[in-house]
Amino acid sequence: MRVAKHKGVFVVFLGPVGVGKSTIIRLLTRALNIRGIKVHKFFLKAFHGLSYVLWFSAVKLLALSEEHAPWYVIPKCGYIGLARVLTLVSAYLDAFVNIPIRILILKFYRFAGFVVLCEEYLYTGLYDYLYAYTVLNIRLRTLTLLPLAVMHVLASAHKPDMAVLLDTNDHELLRRWCMRGYGDPQLRYVKLQKAFLRKMPYGEVLYANTTNRSINEVAKLILKAVVEKAYLKEKR
Image (cartoon, rainbow, N blue to C red; front, side, top):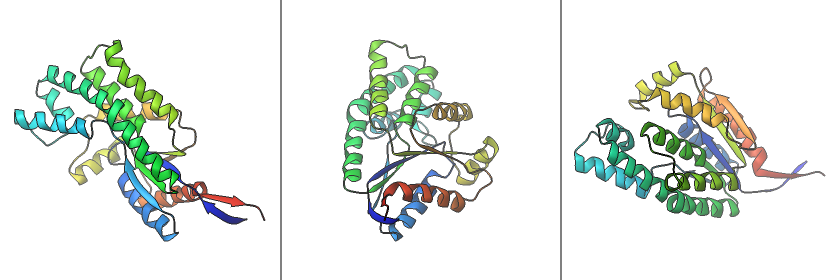
């Protein structure tokens, strides 16, 4: 078989903070560039862009701690009503502004022949809002469900070529958080996230547990799968 040409491929990396997403993406970028494959690193997360500006501004105005994410700090400090309003505004901004724009950018790079390595995606964004709705007791009405429905439709319409689902056990995750000096303060959030991500209809998915494996070993496993996706091969 001979290599005919390489095509644009979209790969998403999912999993909690500390499983090695950023490190693996960095290693893959270097390895793919050596092979002459164009790579674009990307991310698509909830509560970012204009949404993050709103939450961060609220934290600043209220003089709250910046140790953790603002969407955790604000309700934790008792500002539940404010957190509900900010969550709903964020959901609409993400569903109708931030996410569609990010998807268009993603499509452009893929069409241009890049391998797009995306940290997080619509699946984790949708989970984040579902979790926030539950924690903040936001009632499920037409107004509150609309942005979530839009995110679900976008996720169904713009599936990745491959989803890499990274995982590690809770003990190892906590150890890594201590080493890094940060992590999600809600272990329950992480456990539910793992269960949620495993039920998403990705199409092709690669599971990799990083508990007792080196990041380099996991990266090599993923690299092989990505290269096979990136190249169209023809029979002699």
